[in-house]
Structures are given as C-alpha cells and as structure tokens.
Amino acid sequence: MLSIKQSFVMVVALAVAGIQACFTSAYAHPHAAGEFPDASKAAPLQGVHIEQCWIRAMPVGLPSAGYFVLHNSGAAPISLMGAEAEGFDKTMLHASETKGGMSAMVHVDHVDIAPGERMEFAPGGHHIMLEQPTAPVKIGSQQPITLWFDGDRALSVQCEVRPPSTLPNR
Ligand SMILES: [Cu+2]
Image (tube, rainbow, N blue to C red; front, top):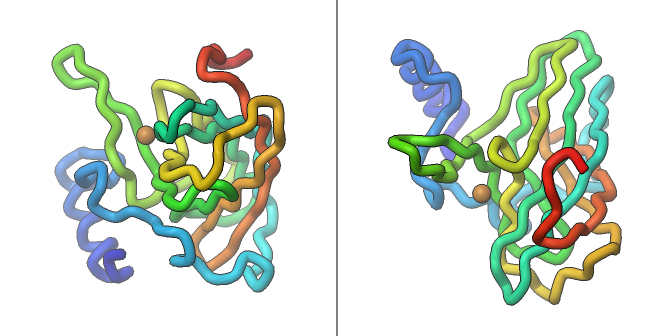
C-alpha cells in the first residue's frame, strides 16, 4: 500500500492529468486477506448503505466478482479502500475500461463517494474482484463481503451468489 501522502500526491497528479480514477496495473496493490484490521474492531460507519449485493460465481477457481450499490447518505465524503470476502483469499477493487475496442480491468486504489451520491458497482464497471477461492462457490448461497473505508471503518453485507450467466440488473 502507498502511504497516505504518496496516494495524495498520486491523486493530485492524476487529477491534473484529467484522469478521474487512480489506475495502476491490475496487480500492483492486491489487498491480501489479513491486511485489514479485525472487522469486529472496525470503527462504525454512519450514513452508508449497501444494497443489492451479489456475486457472479465463476467455476474452477476462476476469479468471481462482487457487485452492489453504495449510497453515501452521510454528510461527509467517504473512500472505499478495499474489501474482504469470506471464501476468497484475495480481493481487489477493479474498474473496467475500454481502450481501442478492447475491454480491460484496471486496479483502483480507492473509490470516493461524495455526500448524497450513489455509486453502482456493476458488470462492465467497478467491481470487487474475488480471487483465490478457498472452496467451490455455491450458487444460491449468501456470502458476506466486508467493505473497508477510510479511517479503518468497515461495513459487512450479505451477497447472493448467482450463476456465471447472470445478466446485469436482473
Ligand atoms: Cu476485475
């Protein structure tokens, strides 16, 4: 992880360059399991709601993805810094971008949500990449994902595991 100061310098540099998100290579800063504090000791997070969380399950150890709608109804901006998911050893914040007709996933250091803003994590856009499954993912089950925000604040949500063929906005 970059220090806060380094991250800030990078964000400013990218903002100047007119780039909204903080892109680095897909594997630059993986959020390995255990990197975040114990979720039970996380600072409370007020005014943030997660809705419609689901996981597109992929077979045979392929990376799955988590999607949801994040609503910041609080008075202050929040930054999503990363996630942990039960059943996966590695998670990353990803965005999708299209360059020259090719769609690619890029790692995002954090996702900022202004007060009153609603941000959709959906296929073809931002998502939580779920890698290194520790057991076969079970379609139809509920699996918890813990989202980590700035200030070591966390929010856990139950996410429905859906088949690979699931269409967006089912
Ligand atoms: Cu991804």
